[in-house]
Image 1 (cartoon, rainbow, N blue to C red):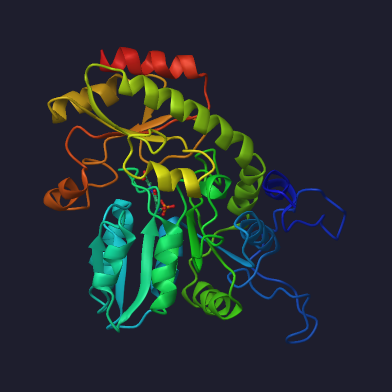
Image 2: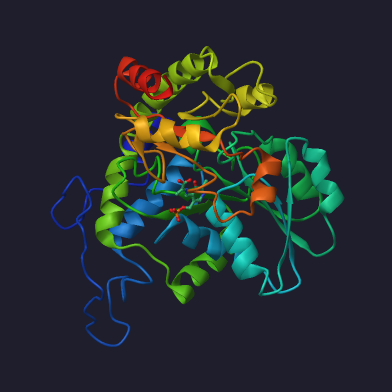
Length: 379
Ligand code: P1T
């Protein structure tokens, strides 16, 4: 099955009870048993729920994996991955990543004795310098949030395999429409399904997909034992969202390109971060591992003035000033004061998250309206 068919049919069966084409929302916490253990495969909805299972199969299908897991948020999915580790273990992570992921790693898991090394991974060979006998996981976000750096997943996976270390890739920005990290050698794919997979800014959810049965069993154990699962209504909404992922992504990419090119031509703009530009330092890697360049675009203004950046995001009328990304509607954010405020100023500035940086999640509205909006807001 090809990708565009998988988004609609991947892992899905018509409901056995009445043949409903969409899986029913099994809004139940528990299931009747005829005798202790005498049930139809479902005991309790933290462990299994038919609507969630349908979604988990869809996750596995679109990411070319064998096992999918759905969680109550993207961070809950990341949390489950880190729970594979033990005190004393080490993780090598991209240094430019979602602020909440950084906060989870440094403010929760460092206290449990896990050591994190945050490094730029644009040159994958640099990772080896940080690998010790205690390294158990490499954590990659690509493209990174919000600087749009692109990491060569195939090159990183070779290093991971050579050193017997798990490789997890946060595929939230790209989605499987643009890149499929398991095919590039990753062991775990993670999503904030809140974003493009859901696609309509109406759900908070996380996803993991793996191929290996042992790894899947460990993660299913953690999912059930820790309990950060999503509910059946939200599972239904994301399953519905995935059915249009390919056509939404196509338009996100077209509009992303138009917005990036417009911004690059604007005299007040200092720099535009979008991997589709030939001048982007990782453009060749992006071209080889992604099918297109996505709808996320970040930029800075000349003079790097905090107040000016705030004024621009306040002036926007079609772009909504809001956290999050990946919905049909365009959103704008100011990472330094919003999504990445939990990263200390000197740390975030090292990766380029400066005061004037604005991040756009370019939606699927009419391209001309989006450009007009940016024109009037930037002035
Ligand atoms: O918000 P949640 O569903 O828990 O997902 C966390 C997360 C993980 N990984 C990436 C790359 C993300 O972008 C996010 C969430 N990001 C935002 C809310 C944001 O505005 O960047």
